[in-house]
Length: 214
Image 1: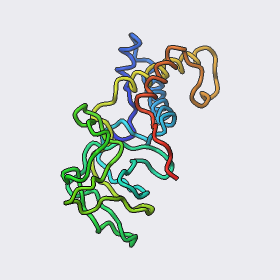
Image 2 (image 1 turned 180 degrees about the horizontal axis):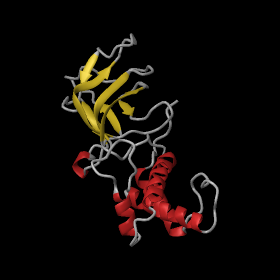
Image 3 (image 1 turned 90 degrees about the vertical axis):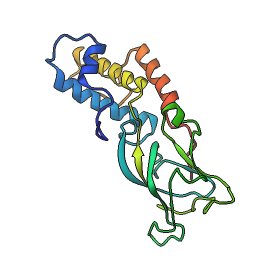
């Protein structure tokens, strides 16, 4: 999938709802995409958060040993792998990322949660360990001081996310079929209780839970 693709496609929607016709494929596809973006807003994660992609992102450093992968707007990112020597740090605030070149092969750089990779999940934070061999043990306290090139997102969209997008799209179509002629209201719109329970479960699993850094 590309970065901004929806988290469920028409075939998955059709199978989940036992549709026999492809008549509404375009409108359903549009709603799947819309509800993918709405879920990201609810979770406070970056657009395309669950889609695997290669990119370079820059983050503010806030000092300390742990770097939370979120931007200045508070949106979270998740990291699968860092390209070799492509965790770059601007430690002297001169606008160039040439002070340190790191990656997850360095013993003092650890992705968190610490067992995420063994469970096929991405990292949400990066920790610098205070090892005797470490070249740096604290992140800079400066804006735009950390740059990471690597693979981001999830290897596969979690089933709970996909199923939430499908359920919301089904409910949105039912709202329209009931006579709504205007643009759908901002999420959450009218949804079934079981859909909302599914969304809340998904939010507890994947929503951004860490406190905002000032």
